[in-house]
Image (cartoon, rainbow, N blue to C red):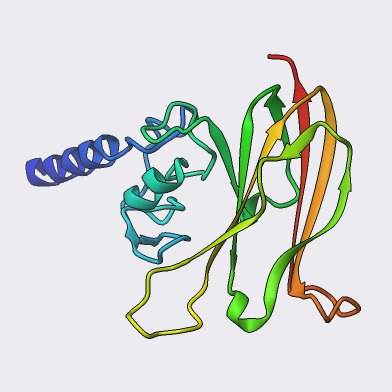
Length: 188
């Protein structure tokens, strides 16, 4: 009986200690210690309840458990980072705050992210959309990567942005993916 109690206590302490990459809501949660899978890199997590491994949680500045962006993360750059999983959300920004929209893609296939619709003028683009490919072995072509678009909240109001992932010459076909976000800018 003492051995079982010791094992339970060790498991409880191990789960509680490894929560550095969690938001205030998830911090202190007791999670079942079974192996899960990180939704970014596919590596193991310490619980099936966790969405990200510690490395990806740190890289993305997101809670390991629920995936929400961390308020006081170690790598906070000031820019709110949004990903494909954030599509359809409404986000509140303070005037002057920057937003990075980071979307997966592979231009070697002919596909790219194209702005389909934009309403409102509360945000402005901070430069053009850029592309960075993932590291690959020398001479290997066709490796995917990420498109990044940086926006700045310039005045109070609401803007809705819609981007579609398609080939430019196939504008009558249904896009492969769609990313839509509503940005609400207000004084903070």
